[in-house]
Amino acid sequence: MYAPERHRAILEAVTRDGRASVVDLSDSLAVAPETIRRDLSNLERQGLVRRVHGGAMPAARLAFEPTVDTRINEHQDEKFRIAQAALAEVPAEGAIIVDAGTTTGTLLTLIPDTYELTVVTNSVLHAAALAHRQNITVLMLGGRVRSRTMACVDEWAIDGLKGLYADVAFVGSNGITADRGLTTPDRKEAAIKNAMLLAARRRIVLADNTKFGVNHFASFGSLEDVDVVITDALVDDDVADEIEAAGPVVVRA
Image 1 (cartoon, rainbow, N blue to C red):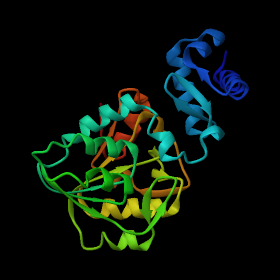
Image 2 (image 1 turned 45 degrees about the vertical axis):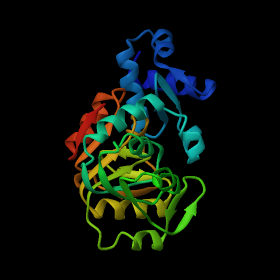
Image 3 (image 1 turned 30 degrees about the horizontal axis):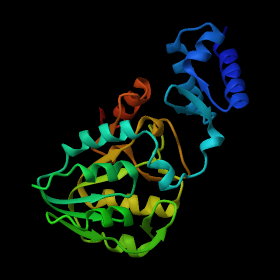
Image 4 (image 1 turned 90 degrees about the vertical axis):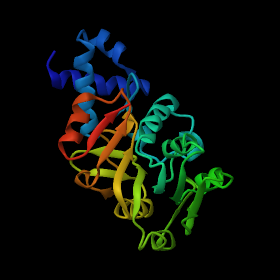
């Protein structure tokens, strides 16, 4: 079976069933799982499917922006491993900027009590979680709170970053590709993420494997401007290599 025929069969299966696994597709199309994974990566780059652990779903199924309550229960093991790797980038003393998000939130739970930090964040949830920590000074960026992400956005939030230059910025991304860089569904969130990257000496992106090869509406950063992308071991090797070739070091946790 030629690649175009496989791609058509894969799209039919994903559309019909709402999800298709690599194992099932490999069996039904009589090809190796590695071939199916390459096909899925190709289809995802075209925006036709969305890679998930073990297979793929229709791209349209995940076109919306999930709420923080939904995301907090997704890919928990991967997020924890990413956060553990990211902890090595946190200075024992100094200032860090931490974007709203469930993976960045996991990172904050791992910071030892022996660290003396100033944490700048636009996340209502992050600020509340850190408020009792005696070793951490929390600077909350103001602005309009988006209920979907519990992140402060708009000019008030961006103004709070003016004149700051933190040691490290930890920023999440809904999508990351070699051609468009870092993307997110909302333009206002894109603006504050971009401002965070510009306000730090070192720039770290935290993104699990499902964010790779995915493009969203608003771009907020070039890969050339990122020092490190930390992801999990399930990321497609070819896609990760493309990201690394564009500039940042890719760490697979």
